[in-house]
Image (cartoon, rainbow, N blue to C red):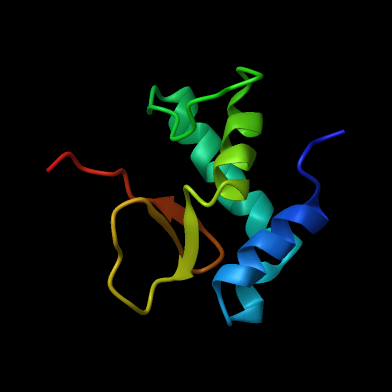
Length: 97
């Protein structure tokens, strides 16, 4: 069983946005899958204390800890945010200043 659960993730995402379309299970799955693919392609994890080394688990924990934000593409994208465009998610890597 995946922890945190979908319900826990929905609560976290819904706390951060007023847009209920972003708080669906489908959105969470797409966002986690896109981020997991980036981790497989050697992106650095955004969480420091990793209990498991599986990309999907790391991506879910990043979502749960608020390290990744899910937003629609109609506004400016800030670093460290994930956007949804036509049922896909993109993660914007943080840049070093």
